[in-house]
Each structure stands twice: as C-alpha cells, then as structure tokens.
Length: 211
Image (cartoon, rainbow, N blue to C red):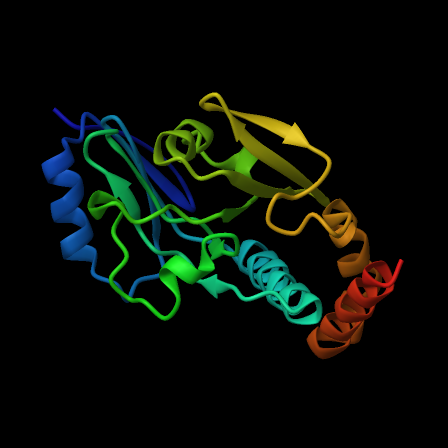
C-alpha cells in the first residue's frame, strides 16, 4: 500500500519501489514543473513557488558570472535527475555544476552516474529546511562533494566528509571568494533589477580576485 501526505506545494509518497519511481519519471517526462526526490522508498513531488524559483535563478546565475570573471570553465546541468538504484537514491537539485570535473563532462548530454560518470561538483538547494524529505542523505549516497543551501536569507556551504555533510566557510568549487556573502549582495541590489544585480556580483568577484 502506498501511503501519502501532502501540503499545498508538495506530496510525499511512501512504500514506493525503485521500479515505480522509474516508471513515474517516464510518465512525468522531462517537460514538467514538478521536482522529485527519492530516498529508499519515500518519494517527494514538489511544485516550486515563485520565491523558490527566483533565488534558484539568481544564485545559479551568480555561479556562472563568478566563474566567468575568474576565468573558470564550468558546465551547468540545472535540475537533471541524478539517481542510483544500488543506493536507492534519486533527486533533482535546484541547480548543479561541474567545475573541478568540467573537463570530464564538457559538452556532454549523456551523463549517467550508473555508467561511472562523476556526480556534479556542486549542487544548489533552495529553502531546504522546508522540504519534507531530507536531501542530505540522498546527496551523500550520490557522492556529491559540495552543497550550497539557501534558506531565509542565509547561504550555507557543506562539504561531504566520510559520508556526511559538514558545514564549511569556503567553497571547494570556488574557494577564491567568501561565497556566504552572496545573500547580502542579492538583497542590496535585487530592487534594481536582474541586470544590475549580476553586474554587482561581477564587480564583487573582481574586487576579491584582485586582493
């Protein structure tokens, strides 16, 4: 029997087999607004709200602008579905990036953890504390080395160490910058519009890069 619980923007299903999970992914298809996460039989289906999507886009753009200013190659794979049957784990981050492993995935569209491809170097999660399903164990089993979690004006950085996430001061992917300052920059410039905000982040990057 499948047990369910739900809020207005999410549904939590229990006792879901891996086969049911994969069939659901096929049925939902790629062109959908809902996001999914699967942890050993528990499945969350979430419909993002506007605030969630705003910060997902702004922080995702910040990663790209920072990398451009620092002259770093990167690949962005958005909310790709990452999954491992052996680990009974699957999810779709709000955004994800390859930086350290960028040469291994450059330009590819056939990435699959089941075939030995590396997981993203960095994954972004928005409003993680209000999600019904704890994503940290899922990311850990998928071996994503770094998470950025934005929630209520704070951006926390976590590194994967011995199978668990430990909060850190600096990013592994972008160690040159005090990344946790990003929310303050966003709040200071968001009323000026997206273009002005991106320019401010680029200027902030240049200021730190020349120190």
